[in-house]
Length: 93
Image 1 (cartoon, rainbow, N blue to C red):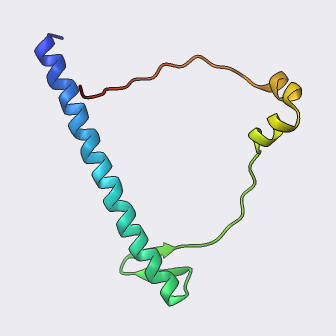
Image 2 (spheres, helix red, strand yellow; image 1 turned 180 degrees about the vertical axis):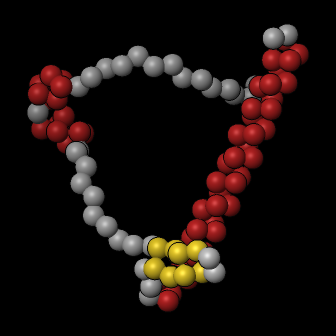
Image 3 (tube, one colour; image 1 turned 120 degrees about the vertical axis):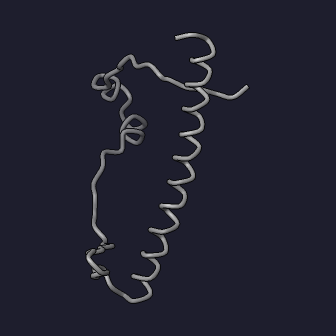
């Protein structure tokens, strides 16, 4: 790829990332509006046109690795797995 083509490709990536962030923000705004309406109506599920919308509570359990490491670092280190990864980043100068 030529330098000018590479620069154009990187510029397009950055533009698309910017649009993606804007869309993600708008998506969250819209979801929050629907959730607020559901809370106002005191419903967890509702039909809206051809859509079924649900906003339900549930419980989840997760392993607290930070607390485990603080409580027993030796055992933590025995089971921790280190992987090599590559990170791709573009920053504007």
